[in-house]
Length: 407
Figure 1: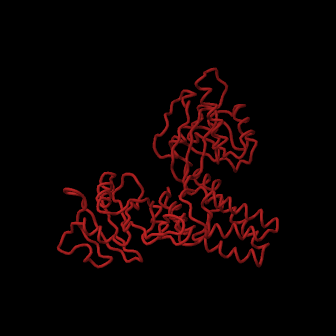
Figure 2: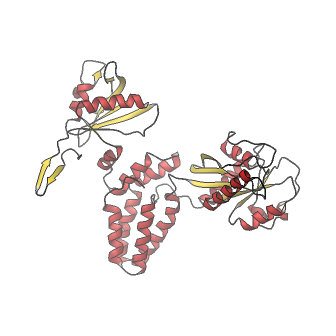
Figure 3: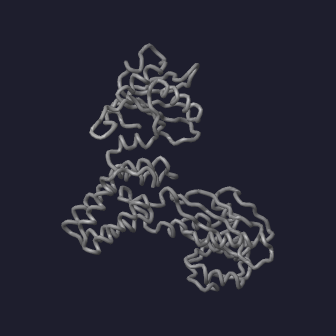
């Protein structure tokens, strides 16, 4: 069993003993290769454990060093790894070690500290210790997995209390102004549409008939040749994906097989996959070839692909039709040349506008996990039923309940 230093350890009914573990060690930075990794040791004996292993440059041991002062030295068997160590000013004795970011280097340092008496635990334990409340702990946990700077900044706002403070205000409103509370809950539910995508991002599928330039468009949006392109129709037979970001928002772009009637069994499998991907998409980019007359399948796709963003590709060639020839609002059509890159910047802006029409301002409270969304919807149900006690109980659990490791 593991526990925090100083916490009681339940060993049976009516019995508690002081937790025997006197120091913990964990890697704070995400697993995987990096330039630098950060390892934390904390607990009553943290400084003693780290000092016993740390071989400093200079005569002063680590436990003789003032808090906040960086020390260069080595940790680990034999030559060990060159590290920077610092004693932190904290309620619980704490040492942070910065070492090389490779998995082997991190394991060398952590294993040495473990052999010296520190108990290995996961990053979530540190988050629980330092966050102070449930929502901040969850935001800090997700912050480690943020795919872009923008999403990290939004999660950092939540870790600093943006969502918690708004929910605390909502507890008062439920009691005193239930109608206003319902309006506030509705607004938070709307914001969650963005919040729950901060880690997973949005899925954008490129569709259209064969040979209209779908794969070239994927490459243009990606900024490098991710997909094979060829003049022969039906070249793309599988789903090709790439993760990127537009305007700071994480996006997965999906290139799919051209939609047409064919006797080729393998191509038909690709077309079926394309149709399934469109059903899963947050946005479909419907690509049309501007250099050729519109074909019946183009018009059928325009009529049946609800909510698609039409793309008039191959603007570098002479046009065979104009936006006025298409039975939709001409202003909805984005004209590009995937081959030369013309209009791609404007297309990206249009995609962002479709995916995130109301981006949150700096510091705004944002429910950022599906569980938060579910909680808010249950609170709305209770308020609509005039069951303020149930709404208050669910809201109080959101704020003060135990933090959840995963989303």
